[in-house]
Length: 383
Image (cartoon, rainbow, N blue to C red; front, side, top):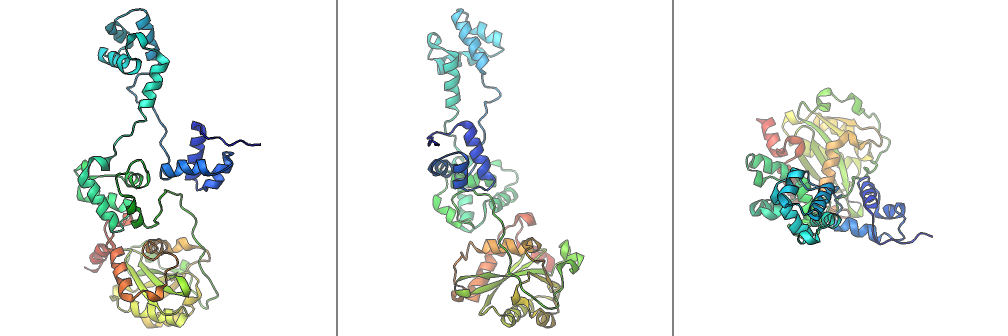
């Protein structure tokens, strides 16, 4: 019979975080560690915001246990602090401070106890960068309220303040400040502005399977021009449907080179309606931005020939169960869930509001664009 253990050894904690980073659930980790309940594992994960703790290491310049043993022997032999320091190759002030801080004086100094006290002292909380720099903290919080991701904020800060190290921070440090309860530097409410709205760092899950059906005269993505594949020429788009409550949908279009986004309201999902709505949107574009459209094998594009006739844009279809072939569009659909969570009824969303959300996405810096925005990149293409 397995007994429930309250404490975790260092080895168990290391295994816990390894399993968490590999994407295992809290319940699976608890079973692997032979815990009766998942409560202990959950407490550790939540306390640290799902961020794996870095292994603790002694500082290179810190006194080693062997050196503390020599200090203890030197005191017993009634050698002076300067003599002990000379034998250790240390400064006398280092030895004096060691005896005072970790021994309570020369008479009470013991190497083992001193080493334990020094190790425990390293657990004291240290202020993070956001706690030390008020303007940096304000900038980060401001961008979070605009739904910028921590990675986008980090990249933008490096561009805006290239020579000011006090105004730069890694995206991991922002996540830690948001998720780790002990930090308390950024308001917990700011996590609501993250795309996933999670309160824990989690391993990325698998992609959902795309819809597919029988479509006549499909042209495979393998026949798509090389200029579309390497994103060398603008005007090649990826598209998909995002499904909401009550069988409602919107169409998403992403330009491959600039990652520029367009959102299209759909009254119905039938192919004639979808093709007509997409054709109307595409015809608004300059001719140099109308070259091709890549779609999955959803039945909503069964009338793709009508779309091509109306727009002179060739439609290419992905392989079944291959969402990565429309990677830019899949990523955009994920970003949209920040504004339209699962269960959103799109029949209540106007085209004007969709345009506003598309504008916000197009004005967010993207890592893949060197932290430029899709809107700026599109302007460069058009001019």
